Length: 287
Image 1 (cartoon, rainbow, N blue to C red):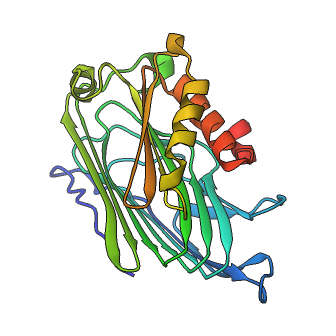
Image 2 (cartoon, rainbow, N blue to C red):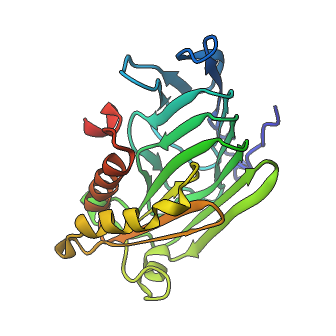
C-alpha cells in the first residue's frame, strides 16, 4: 500500500509534528450462494476504526476517527471491496472536522470496488471545514456491470454555531467513477483562498455555506429522474433557503444541494435519501 508522506516541515528550532495516518481496508462478500453479507477481510491502522452495529437488513460499517478530527498534514484512506452479490451501508459515527492548518494540506482518499450485483450505500455524515482548513479529497469508484452505489457527501464551510467564515482555505474534491473499466463520471471542485467570499458570488455558491452531492449509480438510476425531482419538490421549504436540482445522464442520477446552513441541508438530504431508498438513515444519523 502506498502511503503519501505529508509535507510538514517545521520552522528551524521547532520539533517536527507527528501527523495522523489512518487506513481502513474492508472486503465483504455473501456467505454461500445468496447468503447474508459477511466480513472477508478487515485491516485497520492509525486512528481509523470500523464498528459493525447489529442492524436489520444490509450490514453497516461505521467509521470512527479516534483522533477526533483531521489536522494539517494528516492522511486518511479507506478501501472497500464488495464481492459480487454483497451489500453494505457505510457511514461515520459523527461529522468529520477539518481543523485549521498553517500550511500543510490534509488528504482523504476513498477507493471503492463493487462487484457484479453488489450494492453499496455510501452515507457518511457531513465534513466541516474550519477557517484556514486545507483539504484534498478523492473518491474513486470501480463498478462491475450490474453493480450499484448510492452516495452522499455533505460539506459545511465554517462552523455554523460560531457563524464562522472561511477567510482563507483550500477545498479540492475529485470524484471518478468507472463501470467495467470505462470512465462514466468525473467531477472536480476546487475552491482556494477566501472560500466564504467566493461562495457568496452568484455563479459559485450564491451565498451558500453548505453543499451536498448525491449520486445514484444503481441500475435504472437515470430513469428515476422525474421521481427524484418530484421528491425534491415535495420536500421544498423556501424559508430554509435550500436550493436543489437533479440531472441524469450516462446511466446515473446526480443531485446538488446548496444551503445557507448545514443543519437544514443535512435534514433535507436525509429526508430525501430515506424516501428515495425506502429505508431509514443509519442510526448514527439520528443521534
